Image (cartoon, rainbow, N blue to C red):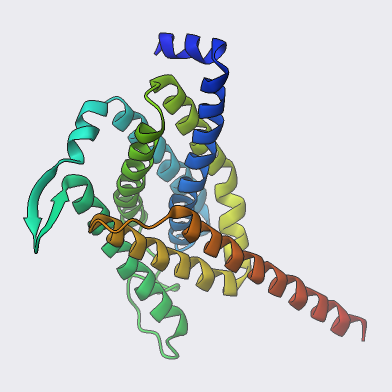
Length: 248
């Protein structure tokens, strides 16, 4: 670790690697952040902030714990059995499980939002969701996203100090952005549906990657950024229309 910090101070390429990895970890953290924001908005107002802090704190803890177990992480990518000719590792199984959970969760939330006669269930806004249940679901997805994040970091550099700094910076950015993002999603109902569609897309991508299909993350995040940009334009247009109506 100390040798890694010393190399960071004297090697310009190490700084380039750090900047690249920080950017990558921040982007990968968006998935985690969207899920935490959508889920914690189901909690009572006085519990939301604590749930976000706990969820993001757990994300940091898991990432650092996985970094301390690099040898174990490498073993997770080794095939353990074959299904229909497809080799699956423990990493693949975790990604597929997390992806299926995200698809199920997003589908249920979308169904609840568009159902004209919603029934009381764990997703019902009136019944809310328990604090313990929310934290449990956050832990499950934290594990999936943390594993994906650390394996990406291991593939980009072998300098543990760079990985630790990148992870801490990325999770700090998540902590700063969590509440503003959650509040923005809650204030704009159409953004809720957009965020749920992102979770559906992310879940499908995790399942595909678990089964060995390479899905370039750049395409996925570019599509998400484009959709978010269109939605921002719609929000601005609606606000402008409301101002015109107020003036008349």
